[in-house]
Length: 66
Ligand code: SF4
Image (cartoon, rainbow, N blue to C red; front, side):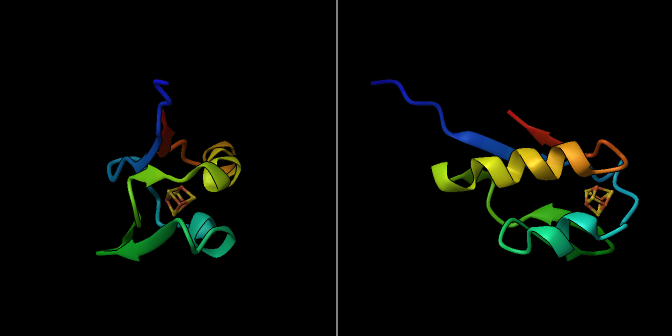
């Protein structure tokens, strides 16, 4: 079984600090030094939908899920 763990990160050069992701998904993102950061890079299976949602909704396209 080679299950891939989803990873999420924020590109600090693209983030406009709108705080949308932090407001919608405080379990996944926090503000640090005026940009959003992923609280944990590895996303547990039950948080994958939330991570995708955050990436889809980020107005700057700064959230990368892979
Ligand atoms: Fe930054 Fe996007 Fe989060 Fe807004 S939604 S704070 S631009 S990562």
